Length: 107
Image (tube, rainbow, N blue to C red; front, top):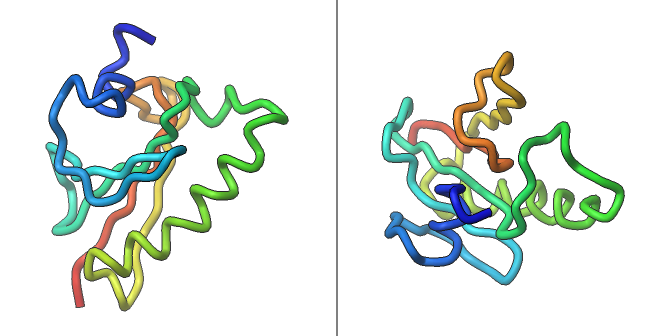
C-alpha cells in the first residue's frame, strides 16, 4: 500500500533500525519504545491486521512466530520476552500493517 509507513520501511523508502531481514519479513527498533528492547516484526506483504489473515498467509505467520525467539535472543532477550499483537482500533492498533511487538529487558 502506497500510504502505509511499514510498507515504506520494508521497501527501504524510510530508514529504520533494522535488526533482522529476510525475503518475507523485516524486524526493526520501535521509534517510541516502551521497554529497553522494543522491536517490531512485520511481514513484507501488506496485511492490515491479524483479523485480515487468509488461509494463504498461514506459512508466513508460522515463519514469523518461529523467528520471534531467535530475534529476541539475538537482541539480548535471553531470559524471556513479551510479544504483543494489537488488532484493530479497539485493540490499540495504530499502524494498520500486521506487526508483532517483541519487548523485554536484556539479561
